[in-house]
Each structure stands twice: as C-alpha cells, then as structure tokens.
Image (tube, rainbow, N blue to C red; front, side, top):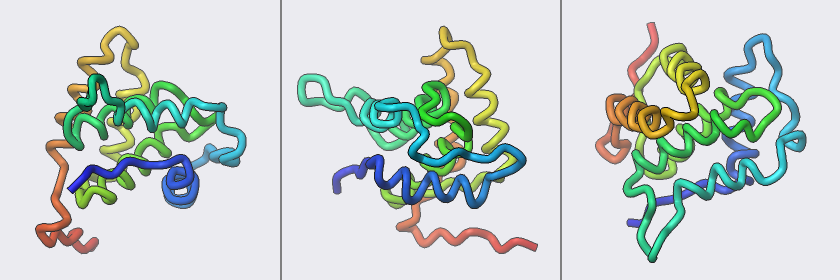
Length: 150
C-alpha cells in the first residue's frame, strides 16, 4: 500500500476548516486566500521529495514530522500556523490509517515548543517531533476507538 500525501485543496477544505472550527481561541484565523504564496505548497512537497528515486524522508513518521515542523516554522498563513499544523498532521495520519491519542493542550504546548525552537536545532527538533508522534501513534486498522469523555 502506498503512502498518501496531502494536497493544498485538502488542507484548505479539511485542515484549515477544522483549525478554524476547533481551535479558534481568541486569535482568529484569516481567510485561506490570505496565505503566503507557494509556502504551503513547499511545506506539503518537501516531506515527499525523492532523490535518485528514493524518499528523502522514509516512512510516515519522518514525513509527518517534517510536515509538522515546516507548517509551523515556515508560516504559510498570516495567523494560526500551529493550529493548522496540528490539524494537518491529523489529516495526514488519518489518510494513512493512523491516529494520535494526545490531549489537545499537550499537542498545542508541543507545537509552541516547536515554534520557539532555534532554527539551528532543526534536526534535533524534528527528531523530537518523531519521538512525540511515535509515542502517541495508534493504528486505525487495529480497531482503535477513542476513549469516551467523562
């Protein structure tokens, strides 16, 4: 089975809208049309790059980690980059039959940590993202059900 990537249209119609609906907080997310040209396209393409017909980033966790990092650090949107990165991560995982069991606040705090990280520590931060995803990752094909809220 081949790994599924994300398109700009999917980010607009799924990730962006979910972020607006679920993570609005006190800072509104501007209209999708106000995004910075070509940055989102680059964020979506880099994790799926190939060199000599081989993936630069091998496996879903490495691809998802790079996507999450780039969506936060490259600021494709005028506001809401961390929130949109979070929802985009979930959409990519879901398309590939995976999910993360993590509290919204913990994930948001982690996204803030990524945003505040020094650019010179990119490789270390991406490794940290890989570990975070790996720690919380579940396979949807195994019949995982989200726990009921009390």
